[in-house]
Amino acid sequence: DNTANLLYKPAETLTELSEFCNSSPDDVLLTGTPHGIVAGSPPALIRRLATALLPEDKLWAAFVKINQRKPYLQPGDVVTASIRNAAGTLDLGTQRNLIVAPNR
Image (cartoon, rainbow, N blue to C red; front, side, top):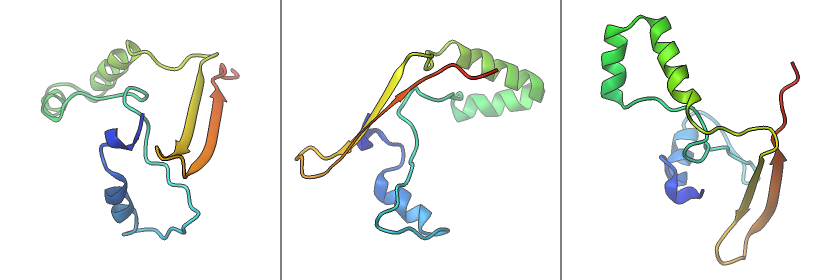
């Protein structure tokens, strides 16, 4: 994915962060994950209705059930991330991460 699809654009994120923390030019800021990678929740209106009508344990059970149907990363998947601009004048390289099964 790319920054065009971020919910909060880089300038807005930096403005918010600067209100409570200092950063240096060489700092790396993690701004979130691409769409579809993490668990999602229903729209605000549905959340408010569900919160008013269901006990907390039922809310969490529904949340987990909905999110279990989504395709998540599995052992053997590879996540590749790179930081570069379209002009090719900035290229910080590529990082590849192999997803492995947790030790239990």
